[in-house]
Image (cartoon, rainbow, N blue to C red; front, top):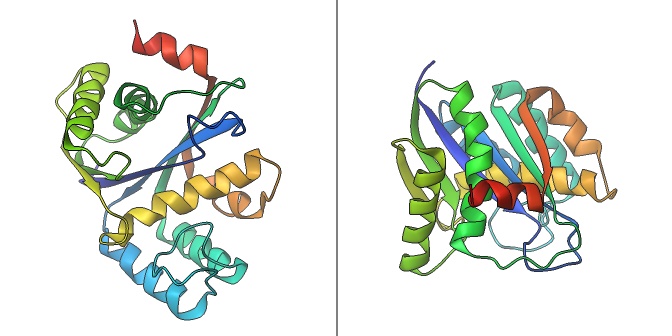
Length: 206
């Protein structure tokens, strides 16, 4: 299979016990420039709740969401989803904890693709030492040489917002708020894994 770029983002938070689940989503894209074309179309025609310049799930109106997901499906991007039930816990947001969630998701991504060009995360940590620790945890968990990993500011590299849109739609479905947009791209989901936090944590300390 051709070289692929993987975009990853999450929706929901680890520390807030009110968030029943956290979603981590990955989108595999062969031609990342196609995402820029989609974003431009949504910005032109969609309505924004905030003038951030970003196409994010919670800032784009319904018209924009529908247009975005229609175009995603037509481009045949591959979608991977991890849903973790927090079991009412307040979980520290550490490089170790987010690393294990990302690793669990990426196991399925690597099983599907023979070649991955790079992995791009919407920047979750801001301190260099936390990013370095996260990369170490991820590499150790997956037990393999990893492609280039980038942690980007979504305001500068808006392509990563494709993963935000997917994760946001899955979270909206999980919380019972709105499943319409999830249903639009459901057939493009390659893998959808669900587990609870104690199960995920056991994988970290194996």
